[in-house]
Image (cartoon, rainbow, N blue to C red; front, side, top):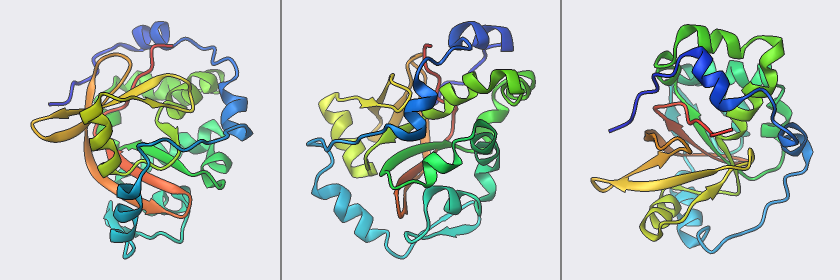
Length: 209
């Protein structure tokens, strides 16, 4: 059900641009989170159910580690971890939060042209990289139960990057739809960390700008 990205490196550069305005500074230290009606008792219940931890990429993710420290042990999100380090977002994702992170697995990046991934790791494209990565981060805690409720209500998520993500239902399952209209399946839900929750997704989510 997920839509594969077939953009070339040039097309992605045109779509995303190299300027991210104030996103970098916003991500670094100005994220003041507010609660919404959607972050309700279902979130707390789901977090309690995951108190023993969740297996991701052959490693146990535990609630007393932060998002980054948990991800460092997961073999299926090594590309995302590497790019987060390259973009200088480690300290942000190790901060108090809370955050909801939609972490693309390694296969998600293999769907993109190899030259695109290589280009994102160049020093001159750090702005573009931050723009994409912060589009995968939402202030607050949204478990799979909360995402399903949002999908049923037609509600959207505002990312740290500033654009929207849409939880949508397809065949009874929750997918995450990006600004380009592409839907990503969720491989692993509700990976609870000390500063938020991570959902492993099967596609890289793309903002419009």
